[in-house]
Image (tube, rainbow over all chains, first blue to last red; front, side, top):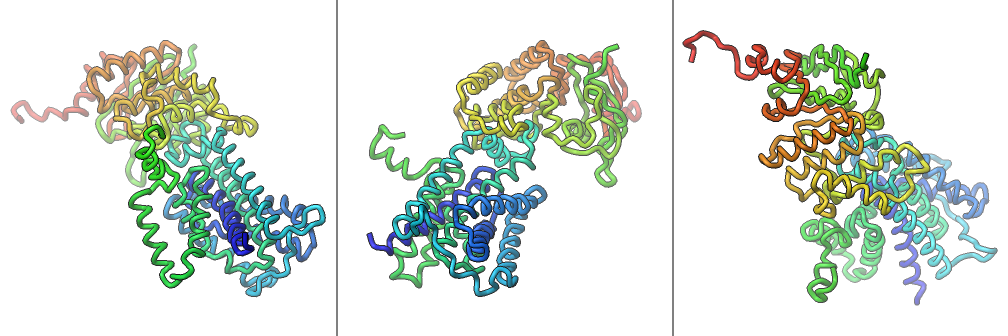
Length: 293
Length: 255
C-alpha cells in the first residue's frame, strides 16, 4: 500500500477516536456539543508542549493529557447543567472560539505560528512511522470502542440514555443529571484529548486553526452520518467523511455542494444515521436475504 | 401516636403574582390512599412538583418521615423512596419498555461509583424487570419501543417505574385520565394491591367515581387553597366543594 493511503488511513482513525468521544456526549447523553474540536486541541497542545518544552515522551505525557482533558471536560461541561439544547449548542460554539483564540494569541502556545518539531512516538526505542503508527492508532481506537461498549452496558450508560430521553423523568428515578452529564463530558473529552495527542505526534506540527469550529462540525457530521448513539457509527462516519475528500479530489470545486446534498439526503432518508435504527443497509439486506433481520 | 409519612405545612408556591399554592396543610398517614382533587388549575400538580423536589416552595415546609426535604433535588427525594408518575406521560421513548423499567430499577446503583459500572442487562435484573411488567400487565410488550405504546400502556409503564422507586410513597398524577372503562377498573385493583404491600399512595384524580371509591381521605384544592378535607362521604356533602366544581347558586330563578 502506498504511504499516501496509509496517511489517509491514519488520519481517519484519529478522527474516528475523536468522533467516538463526541458520540458519548451527543449520542449517549444527548448533550449537543458543537465545540468538540476545542477538546481535541487541548489534548494536542498539551502533548505538544510536554514533548517540546519538557521533553517527555508520548507514553509519559499520555496520562497527563487525559487528566487535563478530563479537567477541561468537567469545567466546560458545567454549562450543560444550566442551558439545554439550542442554547447549549451555541454555548459550546463559543467555547470552541475562545479556546482557539487563546491558542492563537497567547505566546506560550506559539501564537499564530503554532508549535512545530513535535517528535514522533517511540516504542521500545524505535520511532513509529507509516504502518507502525497506523497500527498504534488502530490499537487506541479499539481501546476507545471497548470503553464505549463498556459504558453502554453499565448502569452509568443507562443513566445517560435516560437523561437523553427525558431528563425530568430520569431524575425522578434517582439519576443525578449533574453527575451523569459531567461524566459523559469527561469520558468524551478524554477521547478527544487522546485523538489530539496522536494527531500532534503524527503531523508533528499543530496550530490553532487545526482545531477551529469547522472541525467541530466535521466531527458532528461523522457522528450523525454514521449513526448517533451506535457503537460503530462514528467510525463509519469518519471513514466516509475522511475518504470522500480524497476520492472527490478531481471535482474539488463541487465538494461542498456534494456534502450538502449528502447531508440533506441523510436527513430525509436516514435521520438515525447509516447504522442507526431502521437502517437502510439492513432493509436492503432483508430484501435480498429474507433470513437477515 | 402514629407519625405521618408526609406532612405539608403552610406550603406555598407563587409564580410572580400568581398564587399557585397558598398556605396548604395536610398529612398523609402510612398505608393510606390520599386523594388530591380539585378543578383545573387548583394547584394539584404544583403540589406534586413541590413534594418531588422539581420546584422549591416559596415558603412552607414538607416533612417526609419527620425530615424536612428542603433543598433536596428530585433525584435525592427519589432515593428516599418516593416514586412519581407524570400527568403528561414521560416515557424514555427510544428505549424498550423493559429498558424503561430497568432505568428505575437501577436507583440503588447510580449513587455508588463502584456499582454504576456493573452491567444492567444481567439475567437477574431482566427477570426482576419482567416481574414488575407482569404485575402491571405489560410483560408481552417488554421489547416494544416505549414511544410506540398507546396512552393506557404508557400510564401503566409510568406506574411500574414509579413502583420500583417509591417503596414508601407513590405519587400518582392523574394516572386514570384518558383510560377506557375496563382499564380503569384494572388500575384500581393494581393500586389497591400496591397499598396492601404497605406503600402509601398520594394521587391526583379528576374522575370522581374513582377518587371516591379508592381513597381513604381526600384533600380538595381550589385556586391554590385547601377548601375541604375528609372522608369521601364528607367531601360529597361539602357545600364549598360543590360550589368550587359547579358554581354558586345565585337566586332560585337564576337559570
